[in-house]
Image (cartoon, rainbow, N blue to C red; front, side, top):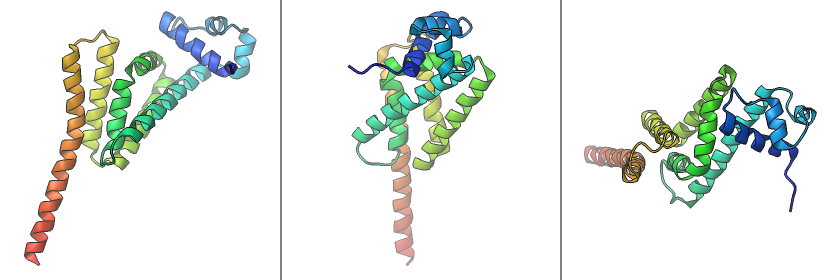
Length: 196
């Protein structure tokens, strides 16, 4: 069995410490002890606590993108698939994503980390609107998905059947908008033929 890299072990230890003690209670000493190494060993990989936390945010982003691409590859071809995969990765990957999202929310106490998160979200929004050029629908889907995750973090405020309907509505929003646009385009093409 391959041994985990020290950097990976440190990041996993940091996750556990943050979940257990919160960001304020997370110290370099606590993370080093959790990872089973000296403070010096931790500093070899991360010069400051903030560097460790920034790397943790990047790890969450990479895990999310990987899950999203896996889901996207299983969807039938069509418009809005990247947005659908984003929603599904956020919600169906919720056991892992929930932990990551919860940690991400905790990390936002720090202004530098909040700026990093805002940049990540802007990048996601830009990427999604390139694939699905309806920014208001993309924003609505992201807000709905974030709310869905917050519901879970705070103890599933709505019954499971309501949560399933929320997810269905978010996905239908994408399909409905696409179908409306296709219908408008077809009507415009038919009108142009009549005028010719």
